Image (cartoon, rainbow, N blue to C red):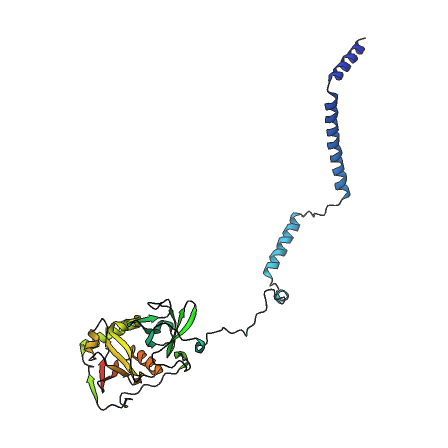
Length: 318
């Protein structure tokens, strides 16, 4: 009777358990088991495409990679595709045609200039509202928004609001072809013993100041300043074109704010410079060479017109 009682007791206990929850737990376990078995069967049926490399295989791969880096790679086929366009060696850098640059309408006067194939040595003396200033390449012209872009023999190119304009040397002809110093051969300066070119005047006199030590020392200081900044010349001299019947006959000189050199040199306000060291100041190219001589020559000969007389002033820079 005891086994029967035990069976009845167990049966009563089982009857009290939540049958539905137990069935759900068993179902989940069966599903997990079935999924794991299906996965194993799948891996057995489908071959593994991923190769497994041994240590020796990895070493061989590294050696092959090292060899490929050392060898020159032929890119000719790739280059022939011209992915970024074909290179054309015949392309020439475009430059501004100076003759096509229109004249400026700014109220400026180009009184003088120093043209040079070296940008730092180029300068222009520009007058605005009766006030002269000397400008280098890139400088902004006072009273305007224009900047100096290029210095030629008879004109300068300025830039205003991104537009290039021409400012002619006072008295020069805009219709004449523009010329740069780089494509001009220097002319041979006349020797001291050869007669200088001189305008036809009734009387010529000479003022020889080559042995004036005070003048030589002042001229030496002037040259040193001009080598560092040619714009300093306006501190010593004011230059403006002199005209007769609308035609330029020379350049009128007057003292700048530093008048000592002007007085020592024997110049007088109103003198008209026509030649320097044999160079004709009315010829743009020779005027450029004369200014270069001012920075290098030891002896200076300046021919000026004073009350219809020609006076040659000689002084030394030493």
